[in-house]
Image (tube, rainbow, N blue to C red; front, side, top):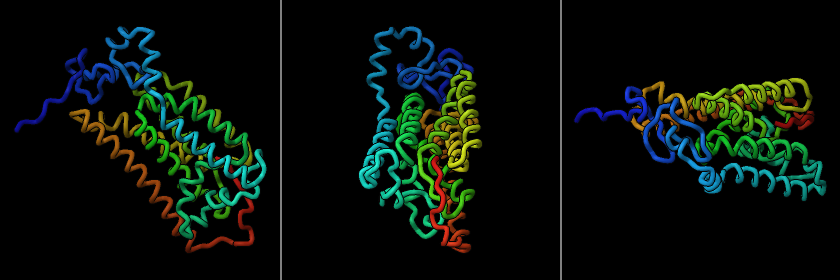
Amino acid sequence: MGQPVPPTCVRHPDRPTGLACTRCGRPACPECLRPAAVGQHCVDCFQAQPVQSARTLVAKARPVATYGLIAISVALYAITAAQSHDLMNNQRGSSLFWDMALVPYLVAQGEWYRVIGSGFLHFGAVHLAFNMFALWVVGRDLERVLGWARFLAVYLVALLGGSAAVMVGSGALTATAGASGALYGVFGAVAVALLRLKQSPTPMLILIAINLVITFSLPGISLWGHLGGLVAGTACAVGILFVPEWLSARTSQQAARLGWLSVAVVAVVCIAVTLGAAVYLRANPPVMAAMLSQSAGF
């Protein structure tokens, strides 16, 4: 049998593409796609869409993954606040908080659930409010572009990347918690998505730069968690949105597989870094007298 003919853009027949309009389903190159409430639309559908239908699309495309992540973080905060009997300083006296916070040495002792669980904990109500507001603002847009499954994958792998960086660069007995590592990954992914849609990523890059300056300037913020999340989330987005084109994917199904494979590769790298750091800590245990003497939010 002959090779399948790759789909080409309806407006540019000389351009093979693995992308398609989420409204009419016709193949379209990046130049002919426009961001929409649900995915991305070709130029014809974008121009023909009335204002009323845009509202309908927004209503149908509820960012369930974003809302779900926010709900989990808020629920865990409520439990830790109830345990500590302190709404503003939930970490004091909360067994759940200290059982899930990311402490590299305890991860090395086999408490691997801290790598993910710590990303849903927060040091106080202000920390929670800032992170959840940022997720609500930025996460919804990225989820509508990538779809809930790919968005959730980017978020969780960015969280893995932040935790892996903390395992390598932070103190072995430092307790770290927060969603900021995953959020930085979302910021990076949004910048990549804007590039893919031929739009300027400058506003998002400025936001990332401002947040990095704050991270470097203020004590008590996990620099390693932020940088690790940013790198992992950005890499995932590049894998989803650019790698299929670079590898000349012939069909949309092949493009999707390459995207998921790219995300899996980033996840494996993050896990390998975490395992390597854990092996090192087991071989070189820290001085236990300083147990949990520091904490950092990320």
